[in-house]
Image (cartoon, rainbow, N blue to C red; front, side, top):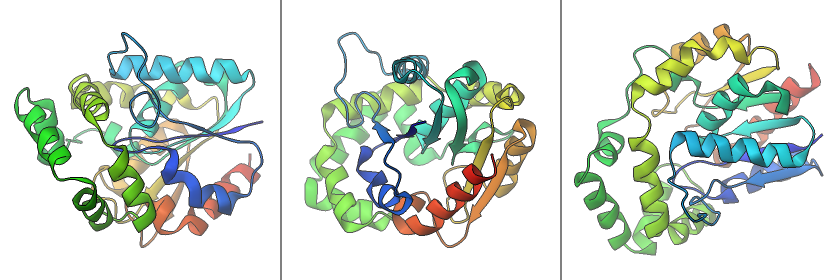
Length: 248
């Protein structure tokens, strides 16, 4: 069966390269969401519903249950798909589980800014105006490795910016909380909640564990890494995933 990796925001599939090397699987497929490393189809509005429908269609085309690993917004799409279409999955793994737990709120900067008409557009314009070198430096400061930091800096464009605003504006925290309450329906397929111990964006370990318990999922805490754990310590990430898959 295939291993499918789905990236998030503001990313492309480049984030997965070190992890793919560590895993050494010859059945790996990377799926970049439209606007985030893949072309934006005509009429695609870049909402949460549309991205989940996109991912569902991609997995239907593969034609057999997959091991699905999602990061960032890719993880948010993955958990909802696990609730709605477990038949498409052999297993699922996510690193944003805490976002679905009670009491989670997006960061004011930049998430709530992106959700605010006018302010969000100004923020994206300012980000684009930085230029590639400064964006790459900013990405490195957030924990990305230099090569990937530059690739993502080069990938950011007007289309990605519009998609960032659209997806955040389609998902207030109440929407994530709704799917958090439904997460027990993901239990027909084995799940893994990855907890990067130093990730400041996804709600903290206690919220991750709340979701894992509801879903009947395993938990893997990755010490010493943050949001981009697959870049910072791909060996540890690969080991956690292999241990999970071996136990299924």
